[in-house]
Amino acid sequence: MIQINGEDMKELAMFYNFSDERLRKAKFALMPLKIQVKKVEKEDFNQPIGFLAGIKGVEPAAEKFDGDGFDEEMIVMHNFTNKTIDSLIRALNKCGVGRVPLKAVITPTSKDWDSLTLIKALKADHEEMLKKLKMKS
Image (cartoon, rainbow, N blue to C red; front, side):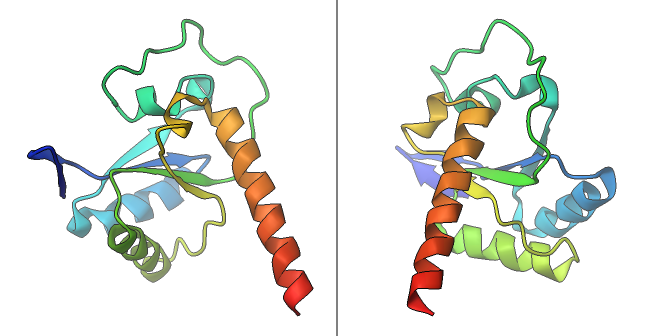
């Protein structure tokens, strides 16, 4: 748990498109780390990420999402430090969930994005990183 302005802030990991079994494993693995786990439903894909994470001042979207969305697994983290991110990754690997390529930490900019905007940005960053890795090899 981290403190911001003297207030304890719980770490929250929001899981997208995980099967019930994979989500169960993740919850079990993250329990000892006291990381809250939230499953994000497709109907909430248009909600601001900050609203889903319970960030004060981020207002909800009026409508439920009614589109195709996306199918990739994604984890969005709130109130995480680099150390906590490493712990989450280790715990997911240890419990058999394995690698999840699409991960993000909520920023002051992304807190107002919906899930579709976030995943587009993540995919673009991921592609850019892969290009740079290919150039090095």
